[in-house]
Length: 274
Image 1: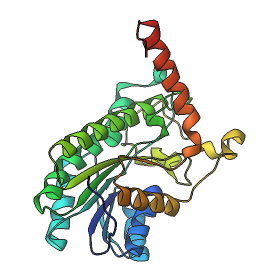
Image 2 (image 1 turned 90 degrees about the horizontal axis):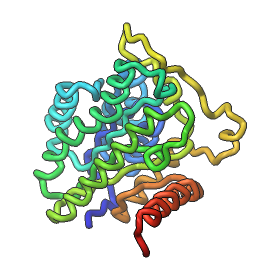
Image 3 (image 1 turned 180 degrees about the horizontal axis):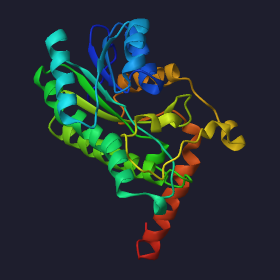
């Protein structure tokens, strides 16, 4: 089992690193001595954030394979190798599935799923080739465990996909006794600007998506909200243990357990007897 107990001196890449969870992870990595590259499509704040936290900023569109390849080339040219990759960039606009266009689906899938696939495809060989302990972390969501989130059906679809991708990859890497580990980050409520996802929507796309700050909902406001830096702490602790699932809100398990119970009941109705 691969573990990363000390990130000092390691080279890390964080997509979506100019804000939110990505910035929080990057900041904690820098504070623990890692050499950090933050990649983001939002070029305006990227340079400022990189300078503020002591990272290198590289403008990247994760939905574009060539852009991700260029990111990797620049990282290797500058540092020689890479040990940690956080495929974190994502969007979370709201819409009923029935109201969505194919253009809506292409956009959210391009960013949330294809963007992660690009990161895995480009960086996994680089993580393997030096033979040193390395880790690839893909950001999913509690929406990757439970799809009952009004208006976020498309988001949940993408996050379920990331859950499956990462679990499958983790199994493959363990079977080949790889130096690389894989983990899926499963955040709950975190203070980010992901509610402003539509700022990254391609121009000219007529969309059913809307922006909605869920933190204004009275029930959701009562939940425990983490700062992005606190997520960074959870991530580093989980890498030290070599965990496959990095959970930020353990108190949310009853929702996951309820879903698991419904699945178990379906198997029992089909004839399974435990």
